[in-house]
Image (tube, rainbow over all chains, first blue to last red; front, side, top):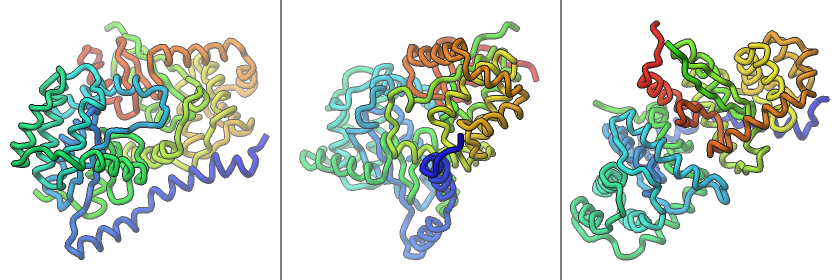
Length: 230
Length: 198
């Protein structure tokens, strides 16, 4: 029995077209070239969550991997993430711990935690980061906070520890207002960009799961002309 | 050196399973493992929703990963439904014939790189015969309740492991989910002293 035209469209034509179009890179390369001519840097937008151990791996690695490139890393913390009504959400959160532990081993990072964190327990960190201006100081805070959260501690989250880190890296007290609204804005932007879970890196029109596609992110930037300089 | 069991959970509807399969079947050539192929019913046929965003991302991500692995990807013909089940049943028959490697690699390449419709007799027959399987025996396999029971048992075993997707490898009770986690599995096999002399 042969497939109907509607079946052929859904099963063959549409997915094959998605694959073929994903290989068309000249518009992004042209856009990147225009950006450079205007003196603007490339952008990597990283949607991440503090309760996600794979986000910790991604932030720690990307922060280093992007240095030496004319690229801005924009950190966009979210709290709500994942596929809506996913029946496997708890299994995925538990599996992510072991998975992040193995991924960390590839680059010499050792995870201290063996139990998932509740999103609500670290939502204050997302709110602080979402309320602050992007830049190297915020990036250093995120690296330090995620390192403390996932690599250095295994017990309850002590808000005071992160307040000290904030003051050390940003030179002020953590923001008292505006954070939750910024987090919601990030979540809306993530939905618009299409990633459905963290950590997700949006790189000029393509997105990648950032914890296990780090080399591909670098390759995308190379392809767009934002190569690393020694 | 005695061999250790290694299970490989696979779906013909999963392009990540397609990417994993050549490296999975090559593992016993490099490590003292006894690889067991376990074909499972696709996630979307097990009542788990796969949002459109995930489907689109998977196609684009697999295209990038296939390039990295130097594997062809596209044109495709999604086998969800009869096509996937027919491949699973022939896959069980292929195990009995000692040709599961040939069939899985040929069928998954046919689906994901040659747009072969394995729900049609012509498409399935082509991949069966290219795998060295006789068509008459394969058509008998499609009606064999014992083979269907094995597919259902594999699918139930994946759920009992507390896992949802494929490809999944299980070694010594540890799960490795994803074609991009084979390097972690290999590190574990090396750590267990199972690498074979070259």
